[in-house]
Amino acid sequence: ETGVTQTPRHLVMGMTNKKSLKCEQHLGHNAMYWYKQSAKKPLELMFVYNFKEQTENNSVPSRFSPECPNSSHLFLHLHTLQPEDSALYLCASSPIADQPQHFGDGTRLSIL
Amino acid sequence: AQTVTQSQPEMSVQEAETVTLSCTYDTSESDYYLFWYKQPPSRQMILVIRQEAYKQQNATENRFSVNFQKAAKSFSLKISDSQLGDAAMYFCAYRSAERASGTYKYIFGTGTRLKVLA
Image (cartoon, rainbow over all chains, first blue to last red; front, side):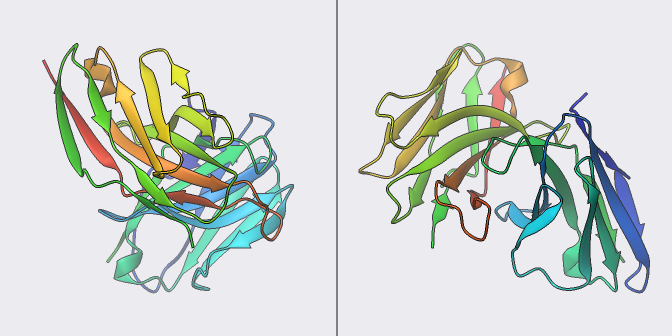
């Protein structure tokens, strides 16, 4: 039990599909993060939400759209993705934005 | 801009032996935090150890310790008495102490895959 739950674990989608990744934490944390992990590349921070407000967007293409309806849930909406977007997408949370993060197991995304 | 470099893509260690994973970073900041995260095959990222740059004393957490050389910008992780469960991908990470746009910036290295041989 990691405390941070991501669904689905695996997702295969075509370039024209629309799907969403979900992240949920019940640790009482107020900061949540999306990361992209590609093979042989550093873990890339995509988005940061602190108290439901987006505080960081690391030049992520608009085909990735985050949503944080409350402090416990974080979504990543996907549309018109490219093959190079295939990767492991990790969600993390921390009590506030300056604390060490707890990570979920990730969603393995494959774009056909 | 800050960078984190892990020059060892893969390391092996015999069970019960000691292994050191290297990490170097570049920054112009004087205050920051450094972390080692472990990612086993289950993919969950687990915090192993944390070091504040203003503290000269090296952090220790059970069998895990760091050798923090601030002047050299080096932050290596030593695992003593290696166990089969230590086999994982290890990521070094840097976090600034200064807020930018309301949050802190995390930068990760590319990782070192550690194999533990029985």
